[in-house]
Image (cartoon, rainbow, N blue to C red; front, top):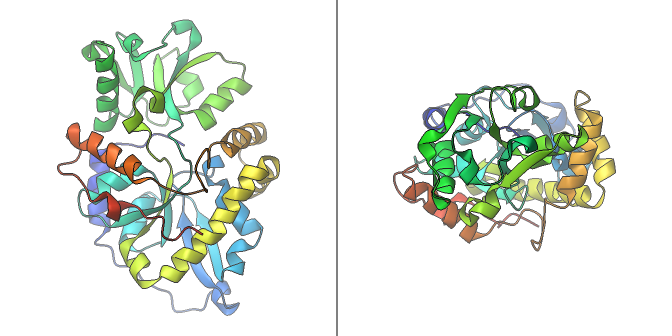
Length: 332
């Protein structure tokens, strides 16, 4: 649930990643010995409530019912998108921004499900600083990674309010804890409300939150998403379908049973704060599917609108084929 690093670096990594040739070990795995197909899914970060449906599907045995022995692994240094693009792992957790940028350079990753229906991220600040609209970003310190996308989002939002973008002081905060820097080193940052916003509530900290999706519908993109690559879809469609059938049951269970689902995540990642996980899970239970007809469904206009936004802001050199960037074909 963290904002990512430089997208420019990401593109180089992804393109280089497609040159990696995966290798297979010679010994039979535990899954194969039981007649199951071994599958790895790589997270985009450390385990959190964005990923709970995966852990629920594993704990409930729904992957095994579909003939899969699934291992859920944390993000590698290379990143899930590179590993999926190169075929090192068949499935991963990514986000629409990353998929769009990757496909604009010919990297063949494909989004197969939206984990959350709407962009639940936005700009947060201490209530006492009275930052209630993008107009108030003027003469403030922004903490982030100073990526081209971040800068363009800020600039476009401020332009709607006739605010002077040049007055914003960008501070690269890296992996710093939000609560240790807000109001001290920086005045506002980009957060996911379902994690940092919920933690602020639990701490009794009053914040102002400017929701990105409400400020610009084009920025109501899918984050996160589940991804695979084009070769996997072409050569192993039954595996993709089986994987998503199990995962869909996992997230549907999270929607109906947030408290038990939180306990399943905590059992898999006991290092997480239990109170935060339970509160975040309750919040996301209403966000995973929202008003959509089913969990995971993706709309073409969401992909088209965001790709157009990236193109208009010169973050991609040409419009991508959005119909190749995502698919709903494997959802149950």
